[in-house]
Image (cartoon, rainbow, N blue to C red; front, side):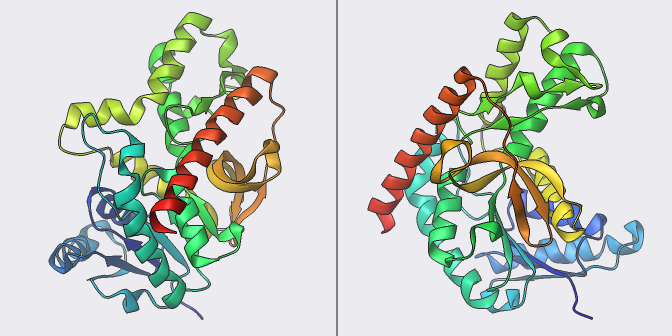
Length: 313
């Protein structure tokens, strides 16, 4: 029987924390942690391995700087790239991270041509595009992690506002992973009740804006890095749905081919995730205002992708 193998490329805070969460949930039988800094990858892998007798997991974890070690991976998570710093927008990361992600994607295509790829590097939508264009994988097997994280942030702020368990909140955020993302209060519920009936519009507007600024807020506080606890949790929820074929409907950056009127762009949409990656994109009915917002967000992504094409071809 084939062993379930997951590779994380990038052993920084996001990659390392994702590795920890994955092996503690035993979602992989073999986990490879790849980093350009071999000692960092080796050190974190060893540290995690030495946690196994205490936590009780049997995942075989290895650190490496050799891309050949990802051979035959079922799922590859790309977290490579420089993190966002205070005052830096996601767009500012474009040139540097596009080159890094292109190189990584080339290696994945060679060594794991059947893998499902989850892209985490920022600017997210553009890096998913770089990965898709470079690997030439089917669109079902290249997915961007953004919407799960943005939706979790929105749900957190709503739970805090209402002083209720965060488990009772189901939020949905669509569009590009940036300032023009589209939080959807109409489709956000608390115990099955629309949040629009529980929180006044003026307070909801504040929450929506805080959701859009969620990443920047943490960057400003940390000063020397960006978020990694919530991003890693979001990655793991996606991985679990794929590995266990749970078919969860989660907001992900997916390549749209006409869905929501978007053509050939990666934007955040609700998607059903199973063994093969994205099984389908779920189309919600949007108001004219929401549709206009999604169109504006998509145009921003389109401009980023055009910039990428000029930078790296």
